[in-house]
Image 1 (spheres, one colour):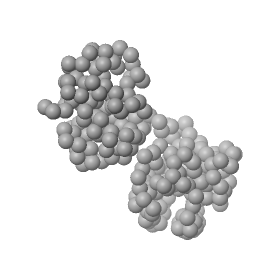
Image 2 (tube, helix red, strand yellow):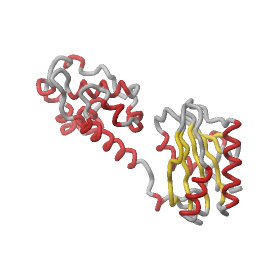
Image 3 (cartoon, rainbow, N blue to C red):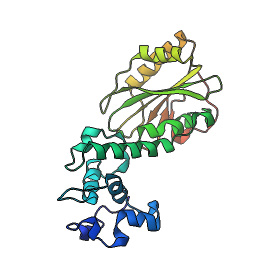
Image 4 (spheres, rainbow, N blue to C red):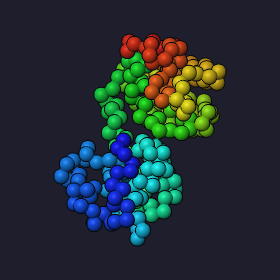
Length: 247
């Protein structure tokens, strides 16, 4: 991310008073979007400022709310964005829509994906967990060719725990006639080592899968830059991209 103090000289000027080559829109046209900082790109989405703040000022404040990490905005809600004075509902909607489109561009087309390893499963799902500050639990259902047929968040919780509704998992397996399932949850602390609760949840889901004749493939725990495979009881550092073996 580029320096958040950039263009400090423009603090008390409107954007129209800036030198043309410094204005975000003109800079994008002349040099391309990849030459703009996160603040400059956000300011373009925001569009207009207020009497006392430019769109650039609003973008800087909004990024501060996200702890200066653009990825955190993906998981920010509308009310959270609107807490920044000058960011109304319309501006917040535009920003969230743009961020969601960007996120979706990084998700592979299910028709082109085959989940053949724990690494494949992690790569397919990890974008859903970027920037999360609380635990979330997701399921990925697969057909007999191990292609994704359904992805859904089924629970969200606190920093350290998330409640799991096993009946809901069973309902989704039945509804989509799933051949196999991979489940995921994150550890916002960044450490992906499993807890005793994680082990118990894995056992319970395996039992549900037996009832519905669905192959339980893995429970993947996602950390900051790593993941843990419950099926192999090991971290990503020691997992080769070999085919998954089911329970």
